[in-house]
Length: 240
Image 1 (cartoon, rainbow, N blue to C red):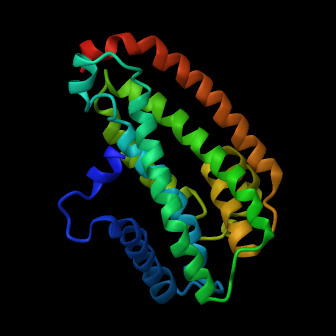
Image 2 (cartoon, rainbow, N blue to C red):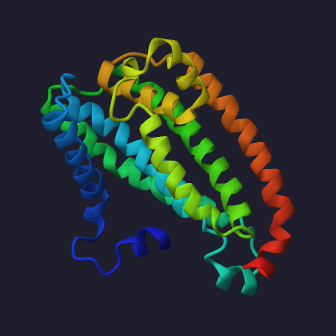
């Protein structure tokens, strides 16, 4: 609650930025790909918005989570508490923002005559995998960033490259056939974004294989991250 209240403290529009940020970003990309680069995809604006919302939640969580430990010296040096709370709070805050933006996505779909169907029952599973993957990556990066502060800047640039490697601006069919399967299986966010697109845009159950691989990667990464985080947690107070 503190993070949610503090995010837009002092701004005139306040909580409305939860809706305005993804909307303005969607309009910017829509102008480029619908006007200048002539994307012919039907209801492209809705397709774009479906992918942007989870990506914003993921990238913001990882980007801000990278410095979640190193930026909170006041807590780590004065109060003894589980350091895992800090990156977890960042992920939880951005997940809440994502969920609060869903009505806007549904309204946009309604404008195009596309309403959620029964396929949306897969949404909680997809979201759970995304939260697990995001949390695992945030634990891993935030633990390492305490000793290597340049990592947070490297992560910001990697996220930009990662964004264009994920089918947010384009459908997965735009990926060359020979690389499509490996691109979806090796990139958990590609599997997750295309799954969201399947249930909301295509009204279809998403392919299970990419989701299963994403789940396995997320579980393995979470286990590794938890081990690293636990081993380094005793050094956090000294390093920050």
